[in-house]
Amino acid sequence: MNHLQTADQELINLYIAGDDSCLESLVKRYKKKVFTYIYLNVKDRHLAEDIFQDTFIKVIKTLRSGCYKDEGKFLPWVMRIAHNLIIDYFRKSKRIPVVENNDDYDIFNTIKIYDDCIEDKIITAQIHTDVKKLLDLLPDDQREVIFMRHFADMSFKEIADQTNVSINTALGRMRYALINLRKLVKEKDIILTL
Amino acid sequence: MKKTFTFNDLILLAYNETDEKSTEQLLDALIENEELLEMYLSVTDMQSKLDEITEEPSESICNNIINYSKALDVFILNPDVNIAFVVNN
Image (cartoon, rainbow over all chains, first blue to last red; front, side):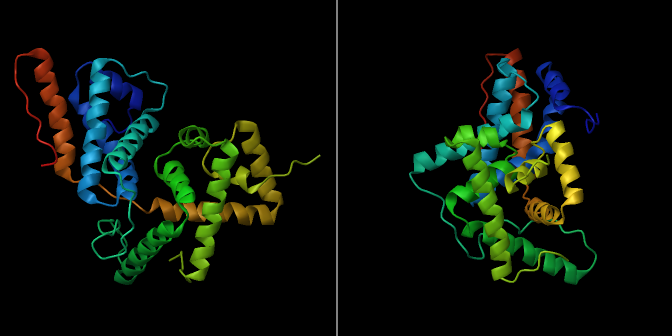
């Protein structure tokens, strides 16, 4: 069944009623967003896949147990689960993510590039790599707010709650993150348009 | 009196976190104020670059999740069945 136009809540209701294809549709719909967020945080594909899997297992268990209370925010809820699992992992392993600027770690390795021109492909790949590296140059609190707002789709209110700061502080961090990213782009002389 | 907008307002607009009234006021201001428009475009430009950062989990991981869900159905219907879930294969 094609669920492309079906709202999250409808898919959830159908899934709870026993239609497994609805879960498949939800996974398909959000896998890139959820996985990118996890991957950007843990910087390891296998670990990211483990956390991604655990995230959806929690989702399944909660939905099946009837404990899910929908407030029209399925994705932010899934992202919160993923975020908490990432935090759990770092707590258990007692380590903070280390940025490795080597060939083994490149989140853009599997980016799909649809341009026909090979030169455009090379330039696009270079831009992705450069922007990723620039993200790693940001102070932790600024990078965190970018990850949470841009990749995890959390509102500034949710970010403020999660990080125990005011909304203004969260917004201020985002402002500095964006300003710093642009400054870094200029410094590194990266052309961000094709 | 005209309202003054800040960079934070532009971020909220770019991330669809402004209410209807503020959105309308901000859009009006963007038309009238070139400097504000430049600032807004700098936010959306960076947004579009960040949007291009995307990764995908492997097909097998997605299948694991779907299979887990199906196995759970079997388990619910037959609680005596022993289900072992293989992680990350």
